[in-house]
Image 1 (spheres, one colour):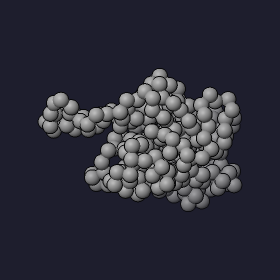
Image 2 (cartoon, rainbow, N blue to C red):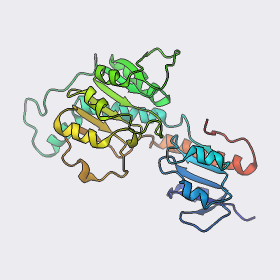
Image 3 (spheres, helix red, strand yellow):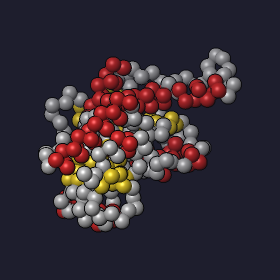
Image 4 (spheres, rainbow, N blue to C red):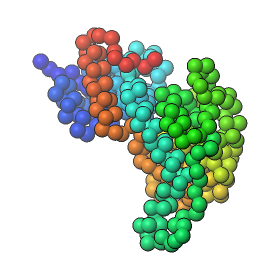
Length: 303
């Protein structure tokens, strides 16, 4: 039996060896017009131009929760279903957010640099750090990741408020409808919103300045939600106290862009990249593909 053609974009390394057992794996660009399904990573996605060249495409399966690289309205008009890996890696992304927060408040990055460069001079290797207990944490976006961040920070004795498009009465945390006011109140602002057109650039220069010279910005959402130019300028001028970033506007981000940016802890989109989450995500992709080709209801369609 001929295996169905499956577009995999971008290439997914060893996972493709598993896919190749059941599908004829195709990479972009391609002249194939018989491709009915595609596997992608949400922030890369499948563009409208690609969709236009794939007349038989009916399903896009995203590895991970994000779908920001897909024009959802355009796909819907073309009759293309989208699936994603919701609530598979949110705990892991929250762990990264907590790690970045601790690293910035306790100056882990600076401490390691001093040690490795042989500049450890007693009594204090780095300037006095900030205690976590008693800090104010503002969370932007209270979905699965935001709630996982909130649950973890309670153990540190941190006060929590959050911002999103609408209040959620079932949550115990205080809701702040004004993002600027949340930034003014917060010592740390953790961004965990879904990355799409509705959240693009919501962390403006105004929000960054409201967070202030003693404040810390943590971003585990998408680079697109932050005005990165304004962020870098604020860090260089001291208008913002620090930043812990796992995501960037351009990925991989050029290392030269951050070479002289102070008070930062930077990680290369570690996010949900744990063994456990990647395994669960791969099984989610495989089951959605199986159901699509079998004509069954998809496992995790985009709501």
